[in-house]
Image (cartoon, rainbow, N blue to C red; front, side):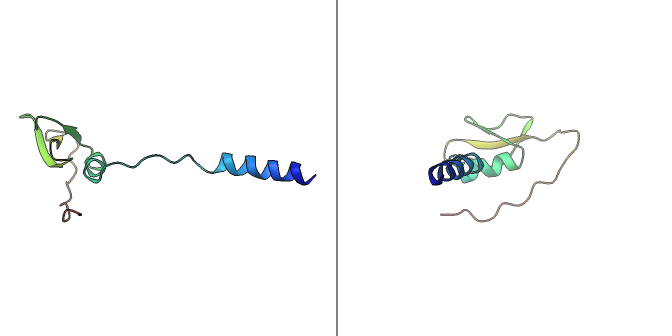
Length: 79
């Protein structure tokens, strides 16, 4: 009886607790939240640079979107 109860609780806890996933790099996460795309070579003429994903990639977003939305001012870079 106790074994059955223990297994039931264990199975229930495994189904409720979500699997852990790795986080995003802070610059990339901010880029995704601003609906941008991280690009290697930089932004094109139809894109606007809205941030930096890492040392090599820039965060780009099209500036001619039909429904414009404001770009928030980025806060200071975290260490």
